[in-house]
Image: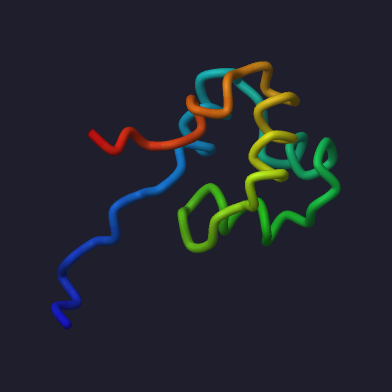
Length: 72
């Protein structure tokens, strides 16, 4: 496997946090997850569950689809 190939991001959580001017720490507190978990979501190392995406979207007052990268 070519190590130069970067994985395609699945979520836009980090971008939406920036757009909304909300810190990752506030997201941690809102959804009851630790900073490591939220950091992994923001960096697309792991993905939140659908339920967690709904919680994040509710907290950020966005449609769940805004948290996902377009597939087309």
